Length: 257
Ligand code: CO8
Image (cartoon, rainbow, N blue to C red; front, side):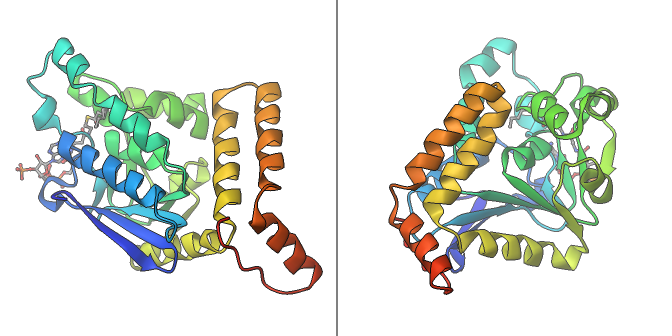
């Protein structure tokens, strides 16, 4: 891996992926995105991983798609490159995925953070969709996910002006779970990941799928999907263990079975 670093055991059951193109502010070129897709697939298949943190560095989570790589491309080139199939695979990651964002999360960087399940931000974080300033528009879900996260009025403002918002603002709009001082954001993301990693990993996967379904379908179908996943949870040993532990007043030991 050239443009990402993967630590499968950042903590017990918690893996960390760091975007690693610091000189380019982690601009998301095609190779980086391919590496990220492969790493997530690998972690998804690893029973020793129950939650994944995705981070950049203090200065940049990611400053967007690699503008230099796209600048000369025609519409047909972009169609043939079909980079969004990679994004679609990333979106299908089954394990809980937490973005730990410091510095710039712009354009594709903001979209990548929103593709994650939760966002922890540092006080220095800057979120934005500045594509309009370079003559294009968001293409990796920005117009959809940002609108669902923060509502039409604010999303329209950010997408049409390219303005950045701070971590504090992002929390107040519901885009971000929590904002903390820069020296704390990785710790905070890890605390959240560790808490989730204590749960049954199958229950976490089923619950994640069901929450995501609420964005993709109407209520009736979403409720049916939720119920099926709820019933499926009763096929696991973890369900027996979790409920027995409650009755016996002890801590559950989940095995992911
Ligand atoms: N692509 C390529 N290189 C970049 C990018 C980028 N998005 N962002 C920064 N860099 C490079 C700069 O060119 C510079 O390189 P060099 O030293 O060789 O000139 C280096 O990173 C450092 O950047 P700056 O000197 O500009 O640093 P500043 O601190 O002065 O400014 C900013 C930081 C404000 C973040 C500024 O770099 C900037 O405006 N960057 C571009 C932000 C942007 O427009 N992002 C949206 C890109 S388009 C997009 O994301 C489309 C998404 C849909 C498709 C997704 C597919 C992956």
